[in-house]
Image 1 (cartoon, each protein chain N blue to C red):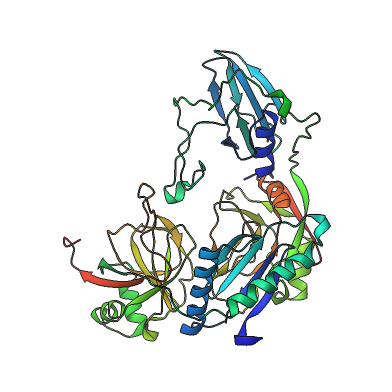
Image 2: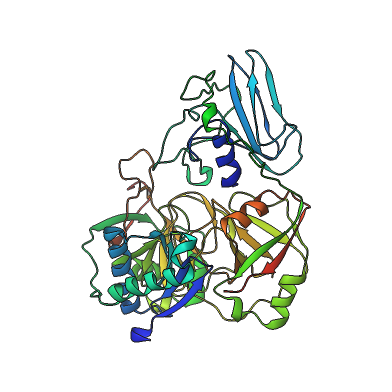
Length: 247
Length: 224
């Protein structure tokens, strides 16, 4: 959900940017270290200092249970975590039965010696990825931007949209005064991650990583990766405003 | 535009190309030819493409600032689209796959009522023709099949169901499809099949591919 934070966790510990990380969402998790080793954390804080590497000791309990500083946190271990690979990825898509999440009691390990930190790869001044709860994101006009009338477009851009608790890896749902939906129906069109669709009820949904590849709702806008990840990190109750970019 | 294609930029690095705005066989065949060509030739600089119904989004690699940004993307699109336009609208190969279906779906009665047909006639018309797989999309392995008998065409349900079982065979507008995994959805469910559209443990996880032909074979409970 936050590729920049996942890449930072990897970078801090000397891994390739796309090495396997553990993603923790909202409610977090607790782990017990079964040996000494290095661990890096980035993204949401969850009681830790995000954007840091630290040594963990055998027997130590690592708790990521505090809801603070964002929604998704990433843990990286030297060499990346060992996990089964499907279609070139260890990512889980529970809905389509692809892979599975970690279960309580499971033992996981990294692919490299956990005590060795390839320090030469550690960036000198890593800037932690910050995750504020109220954000303004730059939005490109979507394919149906001009299908919405002027009042609808202006309402979309002037509203402080509230992130709904019904948001998930498919989409971040935004609540606010309904935007007037165009009557024109459309064929099922491609949907990209970051697409801002307006549902039949006039509420925006920002398509996330597990979202559909096609859909029939009009897309008023589109968010590039760096803006989309910031929306993913806004907790329920936080707000998102959109600022229009010009093609 | 030649052949009714339209283009729209999608952010700074992507373009949406529409091949038409209808359900015509010509539009769909062209979309299929384009998808096949992109898959096989993997044009340089194209990061990813996503098919819609009669449309495609072409996502290009981000340009280095020194190479002219948006202009370079536009030039690439132009070159690529010129070639795609010259493709014959031939549907590539494609196997015939028979799918046994138990027609006992929860919307069968309503579809019969709204179309004014007897239930047997709905089943006969749905299973009475072969369908082309125009694309996979929505969820992994979901085949968009067309085109449906005109009499059976209904808009999507007003409020989508929260839970549709894997294997459900459903219709909406001019299309029919098979839910590969449990999902929410707004299509009308006519029946179900035991054939698995999706199996991550198979060497080839997806049963159907664009261009394949599907034939629904009505069976009774117990025959599947």
